[in-house]
Image 1 (cartoon, rainbow, N blue to C red):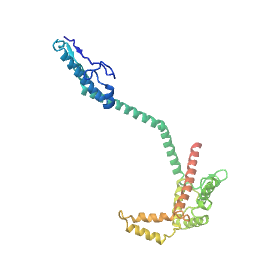
Image 2 (image 1 turned 90 degrees about the horizontal axis):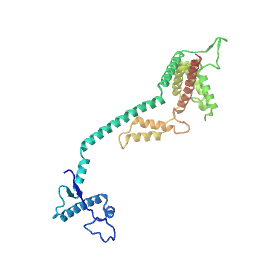
Image 3 (image 1 turned 135 degrees about the vertical axis):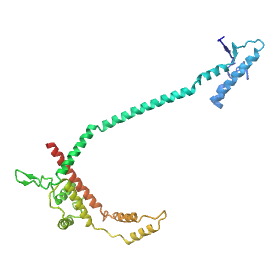
Image 4 (image 1 turned 180 degrees about the vertical axis):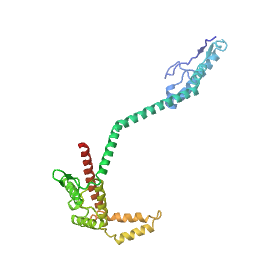
Length: 317
């Protein structure tokens, strides 16, 4: 026969003060076990209780032969069959889940890559990059083509427009930088917007022009004017007043180099530290910092002028 009857009696549930409840026969206080020992202890106690009640039924009806292959006491066989059904081909299930998970991960990675490419295209569209590259190439050609420009000729008057010209002498560059800084409320006086002072700058430029071939009086623009500015900066460095190093600083540096605790100190690094420390004196503001600041101001002015000129030329085409 295919029909099997599983018979079990769990007994009365536990209730405080219930007169018919019998210890060792009826159900235990599951709530108390759960509170004191946890849920797993409740599960084990329930399994033991069903096994005990199955044995009691078996003993009670042994002589009457009620139980056979058709009527079975307890639910052990049911529980075993349920466990077998749940764990049937468990390895296969795990493998299939792993494969599905890998497919989902690969799918999400592909979607993420497509999204990243799309975001990049939205933030930096190829058309914009092409336009910038084209503009940069055109400006470069403009700067190269105007490298040799030394004057701006006006056909109507036959003379140069010095006020509107983009071709400046070295002195005109310095004056325009000072004017722009003062107009923008830069916190510098007029002397603070020169290499040293106006009078000293003119003397140094005169010496560079006379003995070093410096093109101070030539009106030029673009890359050639940038190169001239760097030459002027180099010349000014040659005349920069260098403060003396006090003997105490010199002796302390020598002692540090000779008595380094964590290893031999680098002599060059210690020398640089001594030189930089001189710049902490408000009277000096560093050895070359003022010159570098002036180079930055003048170079920014030249670059802005030349790029504006390039854009104006492109717009006029």
